[in-house]
Amino acid sequence: MVLRVVIIITIGFQVMLNITRPVVTLFASHLGANTFEIGMVTAFYAFFPLFFAIYAGKISDYVGDRLPIILGTVGMTVGMAFPFCYPSMWSLYTSQAIIGVSQLFINISLQNVLGNAATPKNRDQYFSIFSMAMSLGSVIGPVVGGYLVEHFSYTFAFLVSMFTGLIPIAISFFIPVIIRKNEQSDHAFSGSMSLLKIPILRKALVSSALVLYSRDIFVAYFPLFAKQQNILPSVIGWIIAIQGISMVAVRFFLPKLIMIFGRNRILLASIFTAGISFFLVPFTSHFYFFCVLSTFMGAGLGCGQPLSMTTTYNASPKMRTGEVLGLRLASNRLSQLIAPLFFGLVGSSVGLVSVFYVSSALLIGGAYLTRSSADEQ
Image (tube, rainbow, N blue to C red):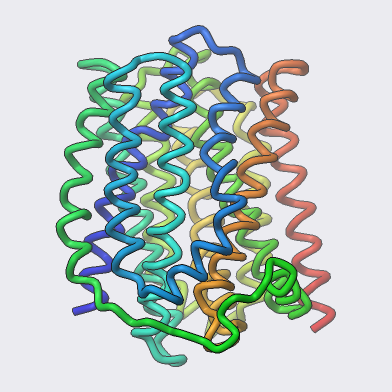
């Protein structure tokens, strides 16, 4: 029952999020924003969550998971309203800030619900299913968003996303309330940072940040690159959706792959595959090649996220799971904040294709660091 509720909410909020994520950069470009300004808008999604992530995890531990999920889904719906009501750059900044914080509360609390509902034996399976639900939302969303933009308007895509949010809001009330009060529940920020002394946790945080930032960079900058190749918005949506399909598919086989090759090898191979795919993107302008690269990129990124979730949860002190999941999302948001600003600067000064080369180098370098970290354990 709990798993089903979590899956429905996850698909719902991921669809509403992914209808608009690729649209944001195209809408900003339509409003006259340059590459660096588009990077700023993308980074705003991660700015406030970076500071609130750990505290959001503590709130989830203290008040239970239902309230943060309800408030988060309502907040996302409100955030979608701004670009629809006020089609301007400032509304995009406001929207991304609200959506970023709201999504943070939903993500931490849903992961906490799953972690508590699962046993150590089936936790990999639960988080794989959760990740598949997220990927399914990232398949449906870009396709719907692409067609809405092509046949209606940018603002209409935000309107549809608003109404989609009503479903996860309603289902959120079925989330069980489990309060994990702890005598030491008000750990200071420095106390949260002390969790980084756990080697396996550090590795999980690094790999998670690499996977998430690269996914965001692709969703933010590929539409701009594809637009330069005169590719239609609906086709761009399909290419991004194919990455999501690949992420879903690889997670069906992930538990078996872990048994055969082990976590460390799968993690290394997944990040390296994504890095090579990024590097090859600028070498083609053909739809089918983009689809192939998107498939390989999705397969690589699809393994990293559930592995890092499970590793993070398993490495957490029992009464501080929400706090540690918050720390994981804080590290993710740090990468999501720095990367768009950095790549926006690179893209505006050197050229858009350089975004893919530099991102590839960072991913392959990250794979090497992940291998080194694994060797030390």
